[in-house]
Length: 349
Image (cartoon, rainbow, N blue to C red; front, side, top):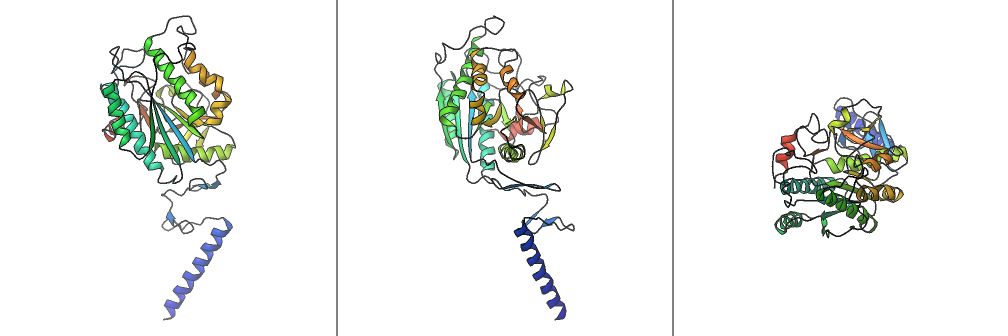
């Protein structure tokens, strides 16, 4: 009987201590089993709370001052086989990994984003997500496949067909060196312009521009949102996030900074392709740079984007959150130390 009273007394003081710690903003951890009684979770679980706080063991808590409640994802789709480029990459004659038709990469990209968005909504319960698909010259059959896939999801979406004459008057038909560019490149630039201009009318906060050959991990969107909130709150400024850990970033030795995101390390980079996440504020701030991506073919194509990274923070994850499904030997494609086959198979329709 005495033992029982002692145990009850111990439990009472423990509960009181936990309540006091919680009220004072402290977190305590039981080193026997790594249980955190103030959170009711173990140290290896997700300890962060969207829009509220980011917790990393053993670094502690960061209060979120940069809250994310709205995300617009703009997928640039191009599945046409008009110039017999269904399997190869833009302006290149190399087969993509797995050698499938382009529509297969597009569908798996969209499927991976749907799954990743659904996963993110488990933590970001009040998040408004909208998917926009800007399509240039896809066949009716391919558009039907895209629509059928999107209609099965619970996400808000729009499929926007781009007229081939849209932006005709502002797209330069020659590159910055005066050389004529291909029809496929013009289509790509037209799609970039469409997605950029859509941010003014369709986006409210974060915007994720993505090409239709990026297959995402299920935790990709969640990791990017948690990381955006955390690092933007720490830096007290808007940032850029790229989901891919590109091989070409390892071909030269550059100074970089390592930051701790949600469940990944992130490093500062000075270059990306035109798949990235940022805020509408940043797009409007650097509007001329973004429009320039679609009006003239620079070398590299992303040059005007890289100019922004000279002034702003752009971060890339280690390990990667997405696979760019290009040629297996491409320096701009599939990330190193990454399970390519699993990502491909996981997103089969």
